[in-house]
Length: 247
Image 1 (cartoon, rainbow, N blue to C red):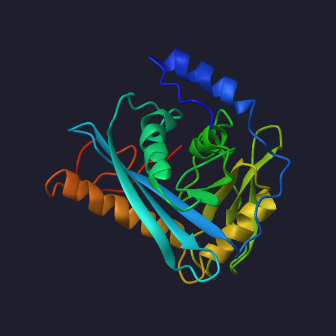
Image 2 (cartoon, rainbow, N blue to C red; image 1 turned 30 degrees about the horizontal axis):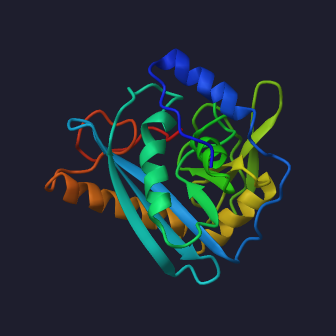
């Protein structure tokens, strides 16, 4: 595992991103979908108390049954800056992953990897620090637009940078339902990342790993803050509301 560096300001954070981005591995296929273990990670904040809770839920990739789950609570030590949210989240996410008895297998983040303005979102950041294969599956597009994919499950359209590079895909996980936005984090191909997403989203729009981790971290935050409602990344208070993308 690469040692964690906590930057003191925005300038240093961008320099750390530049250094770590060079270590992203993009030429590995990754584990086969539907086998082994898959771990969903998610976070929730109480910005008034500067508390962040991370949850990890390990699933059997074939049955989607829970193998193990855990949470970790930390302090928010970096300001809210779009594009640098990983620095607020990574320490607590690493803590919960390290607490697991199970090997995480593939890690699925509620956020982005390559589909990020600096090509280094949370999924890439986490992958480089842990060495694990990681993908990002986001609920909303962040910077890069995509044409609407076809209406059927499995239809997709590319998320394109200005130079035409494909940085991710809008992927339809259920017929006629709003797509999710898949991008590579580390040590997984984009085709394989989409295949994993479909395998995990059998019955719902979101992967089961994300759904379970989201529910767990919200519940843990409520318990940690004596019943105060959980907020999502980018929210400015403690009331649950639609979130900004986790990047």
